[in-house]
Length: 150
Image (tube, rainbow, N blue to C red; front, side):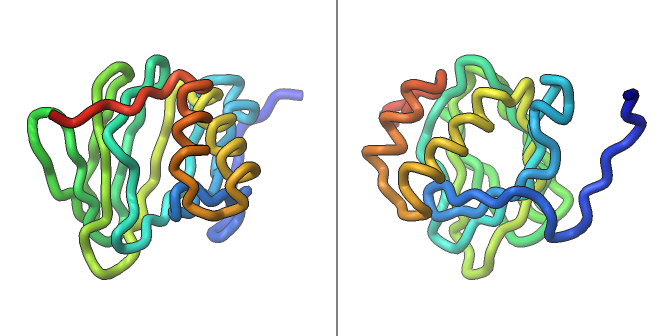
């Protein structure tokens, strides 16, 4: 059966916890025939991801509320509502909510299957807790490398 559209209502989608942030799946790699993975991410104040690099996946962040600080080896940029960031595969990046309100962003990962599997594994093994050693071990198994900051 040919699919012409997929509609996901507000608040719907599989919810996972990753390093203290909430990830709500909106389009899985299976639903997109392997093209991409789309999710809403909610990053509480003080949370984010350390400097890392994806061997395969590229990411697109579109901030819808709050301010997200995005770090690269070249420096940092504060992204607010309506701002867009492209984080290509093999490039290094980190992000953090340095504000006092939750950040919400639409994140699209392409092709996304590895990222989707990684987030599932983190959620299942950490049961929503922030457990950095477990996350780092899982990252290495999912083509994600933590990058040392000089």
